[in-house]
Image (cartoon, rainbow, N blue to C red; front, side, top):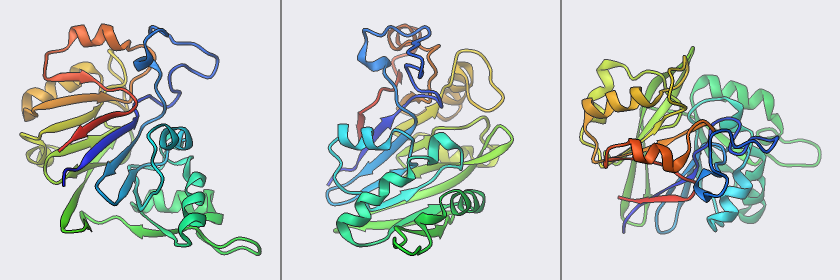
Length: 257
């Protein structure tokens, strides 16, 4: 059984187009320039495991024909990664079972404060989610196949974010400004590196294109996929600038591993 990793959304916090209809430097005629907010899915034969719940989650799941969600792992607490959490309510109603979510302490506190109704029974509604502390490693099974997630703290400006490495083959770091030297060994010789590339120019909270190129030279993944891109990055234009082992992501891109 092969695992699939689906990039549900590869846009930055404002998406593309922006809410006023602006595509910035992107060509609106290219469907790959239509980007929803960052979100991803680990898909095996019988299980669907989300990474983050973007504000565009309903659209993303509908478009990709995802009819169930079994677990959710969060990278960090920012709105573009969390504010689609209410969309999980349907899966509770469908299965009559709380959904397990996994977060670091900061994200846990934010979610319990901002979306308390998801976790506490109220007069008319039961809790839909069961919140769990994120550990350094997590494993779950689909039939006889083990799916292993290694959780690595990375910098995202002045906060921490989580990078997930799945079965030692794929790393997902959608919001990142620095990987600590002690952790670089976990990124070496991966099949896929899905990595933040906000824009061409440096940014205090995100990788820019040069940051990605520098990292690729250090860790040598077989293929690198850019995500979290603003409207400054047009799909075709950046693709022409990139070496063959690096490609821009697009919503719905599916990786097999």
